[in-house]
Image (cartoon, rainbow, N blue to C red; front, top):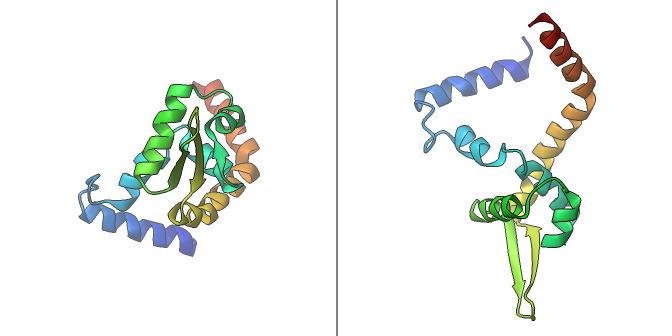
Length: 133
C-alpha cells in the first residue's frame, strides 16, 4: 500500500469518528456540493478568467440555463465564485473565481490530469463489467 492510500485510509477513519455527518465531515460536505455533474466543469471554465453567463452557457453547451444558474449560485454561496453585476441595461453579470476558488484549481487540476491519464482504462473496465453482467 502506498503512502497516499495509507494517509487517505487514516483520514477516512477520522471522518468516521465524526459519524460521516454532512455538517461536520469536511469532505462529504464539500464533495456533495462540488462533486455534482457541473460544478467542476464550471470551475475549470472560470479558471481561465472571468466569464459572462452566456459565455459559460456556450462553454458547457449541454447544461440548461436553469441548472447553470443553480450551480453558479451554489458555488457563489460556497465562496468559490464571485458574481459581479454591472448596473447597465440590461444588467451585465460576470462570474470569476474567488481566492478560495483559485485555491481549488491545483487539486482540481490533479483530478483532471488523473482523469485524462486513466480515462481509457476506466472506459475499458466499464465495458468489461457490462459484458460480464
